Length: 140
Image (cartoon, rainbow, N blue to C red; front, side, top):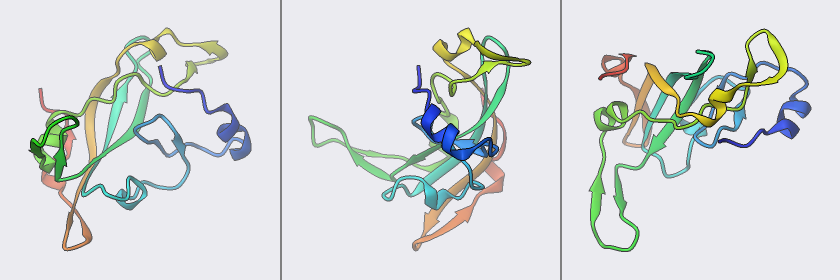
């Protein structure tokens, strides 16, 4: 289950959440891949649905092209199609039951269901390039 981030939401004073990052942190500016991790070279903004109430959330995931697995020297290579194919956010951001303010949703404790790739990006020569061919319904 993701943290509640009530402090951030309170300071935002009711501003609409545009998207949530990989830790469930609410973000209030429109999505830009450069707002993810400083070492990320791949970025995906996608939509997930809560298993319980079916509310949808735009969420993000970023990745490096190459990573060294912890505890070994194995180099793992990732590419944008692989990141899109494994879109898996885990539990959705904390939320109330739709139409029932203050009533927690049981779906906060369940894995979310990825539904749609909204934006797919990769860095090419230090510039972010959008790849619309990878956007649309989440592949099975």
